[in-house]
Image 1 (cartoon, rainbow, N blue to C red):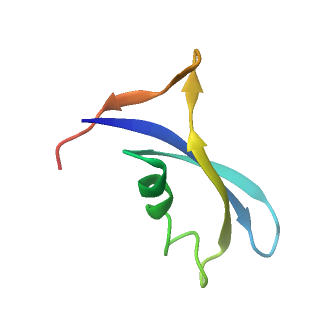
Image 2 (cartoon, rainbow, N blue to C red):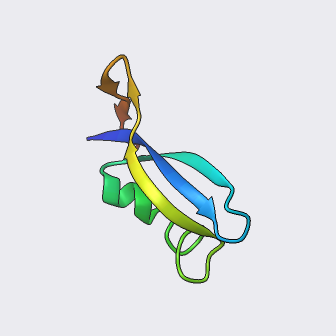
Length: 68
């Protein structure tokens, strides 16, 4: 199975500083969920601004999933 590289946009709730984090996941929901409850959420310092795949040469960046 393959994983794709996703960019997750975050904005700090107090300073409004914006950052993008990249994570490997099987789909967009899984990528976003990896940060839910730690960085994004009701009692967390950041608000989510969007998630999307990372492209290189007009193709989504992909790798073989590691067995866990």
